[in-house]
View 1 (cartoon, rainbow, N blue to C red):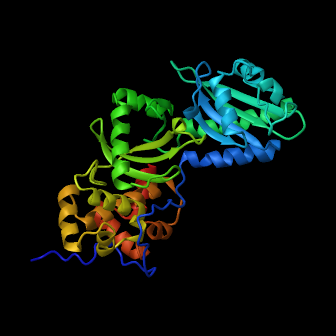
View 2: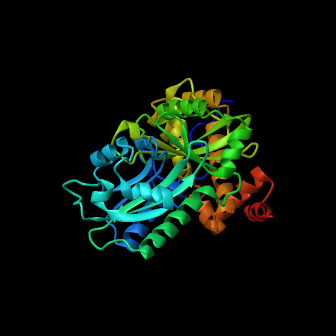
View 3: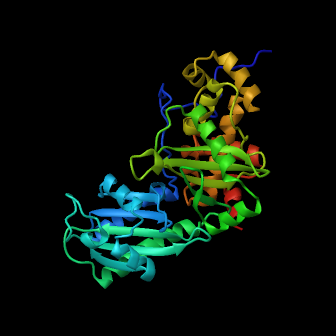
Length: 382
C-alpha cells in the first residue's frame, strides 16, 4: 500500500499557514551564553555611564581580531590598528594586564582619533585565563566625561567576573561551551567541557570542517548571528551542537564561532551530517529551524521543489528515518531539554515545541519515553 504523504506534522498547525521561504528563524526563550553579551554591554554602559565597550579573550603578545567578542562604539579601523600594534603603546591596558584593572585617558591608551579625543576617560579590566596560550579576558570601556575612580574599576571588575563565570561554570550538566576562531583554533572552552574534549581526544578541525559543510548545504544563505543546530557523531558519541557565527569587526578575519555541545540520549535524534542530495539537506535545515510549527510534508517538499511522494521516499533513504519521525524526534528532544533546564509550565513547553495541546504532548511524550513529562522532569532533578 502506498505511504500516505499528505502530512507528517505531529500536530495540525492551527496558525493558518506558514512562511513559504527558507528564511531561518531565531529560537525564542532559549538564549545561549553569547546572547548575554548584549546584557554585559548594557550593564557596563548604564552602571558606568560608558558609550564605548570592547570585550575579548586575547593573547596579549599576539592579539587577533577574531578574539574580540564585543566592539561597541569604537571605530573598527582604530581597533584593528590597536590590535596590530600589540598594545605596545597602550599604557592603560598594559597596566591592567599586570594589576587586573587600570584607568587613564584615550591618549594614554592610544585610542586617539577624530571620534575619541585624547582626554576621554578609559578603563580596562583584565583576567588571566588559560594555559598554555596565556589568554586574558579583556574589557575596555570609555565614557564622555569624568575620570574612572577605584569604585568604578571595582564595579567593572565585578560585572566582568560575573559574566565570565557564566561561561566557565555552566549550570547545565553535560554542556560544553566553545569559542572557536576563524582558523579553527579553540579560543576558549569552559573547564569541564575542555576536560571532556581532551579526554575524548576531539580534534576541533575536522569538526569545524564538517560543520561548515553542513551549514553550506542546509543554510546556503547563512549569515552572522543566526542560531542553528545539528547532530553529529563525535568521538563515538551522538552530540547535539547549537552554533552561531559572529564577528565583532566587519572583516573576514574576525570570524568567530560560538558552539554549545550536549550529549544526546540514545534514540533521541538521528545524527545527520553531509547529505548526498542538497534538497534533502535544505529540508533538514528547515525542519530543524521550524519544528515548533509542525510543518506539513507538502510545505517542505514544495520549498525544496520535490513532489511530496518523492520527497518522503528520498528523505527516508538519506536521513535514515521518515520525515514524520524526524519531526517527532526533534520536538521531543527539544521538550526534554526544556523540561531539564527551564522552570516552565508543561503546557508552555507543549506549545513551544509544536503540540496543539497539553494532552496531546503528554500522550505523545509518554508513548515515546515511557514517562510523562512531569515524571521525566522529576527524574532529571534527582
